[in-house]
Image 1: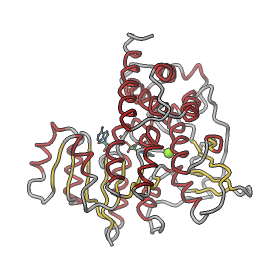
Image 2: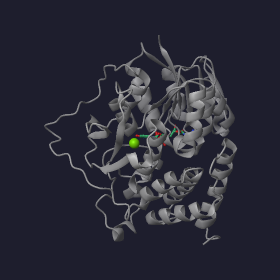
Image 3: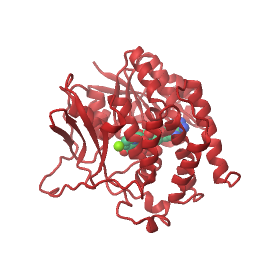
Image 4: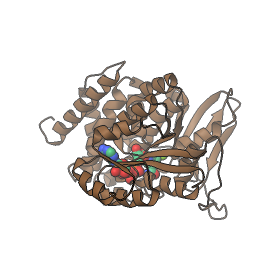
Length: 387
Ligand code: NAD
Ligand code: MG
């Protein structure tokens, strides 16, 4: 049986690597739906190569170009946010890979769960914003949520075969990013060019900035809570600059299991597709003669305040992680446009957390309203109309 896969965000870092996995296993997987935000040329090239059932471009201004370029192929062409949210409900799809960035991933993910498609979850922001709601819907619709984030895939792999065994804690590894050894003074003046140079992983711009600021790790702590049902005190972060151990699980007898490998997202993507099986992969292997030093250090939440803010949001619960996510999306976009300093991002996020209405038990509509309000407050802080 060929599994038919919808890739939301097929032109991005995760999306293109997912297509490499599909290309390696044409007898197992087919790219049935491909979607992109703006990069129409890449989407056209992908559609010509993979011959999906349908493509969606979120930016409606690019519809004509896409439609004309694919006119000779039996590929359905759609445009707009609404089409993107609905396409996941199409019948011939088995797995939806959520590989788009940010809050925009929430609604299509909800629709895919309601249509009972298995979710291969790369878009961690969905779990950060609305993990409780996503879990409830997945449970009601008996839909699996398979982690793609490398840390969560590592934990998921460590948990295989441990069904009834109690987990004491999960240990998320963090590379520490490009500024791991920078002092607070040095962090004041770092630029986006420096922040975009991640030492170990080649990823989209938003997650690369989040990795430099450690907001990414904070989000992964929240993601771990909802994916694995652990409490905040059971989630530990340890800085491991070599990125060889992708994460670990400690069981109640003290045993620690770890998953190791090259820093290559194709493995967790493929595992999400093939679970519970493993498939042969041609990707490079870990060479222990080259990684003779594996080191570990405590994360420093004084220099990297975002990690502390994410734990605070997790402990406060309700719509607080949604507030942090929206504020962070606004701040990262502003940082990429030189409108805010690196450390200014944490200050702004903290202020937004204080100012947006707290809702202890949010509904979907509350998340939508919270996201909009938090973005407004963050924008007002950025343009100086709020101090
Ligand atoms: P990217 O910027 O490289 O790609 C994003 C993709 O989503 C592109 O195809 C883009 O066209 C599409 N997109 C962006 N905004 C959209 C919108 N508003 N509507 C519709 N489509 C939109 O990002 P990435 O690095 O591939 O990351 C994707 C997701 O996976 C993120 O949530 C990220 O946190 C997560 N993730 C990425 C990595 C990685 O190695 N890149 C690792 C773990 C998790
Ligand atoms: Mg990760």
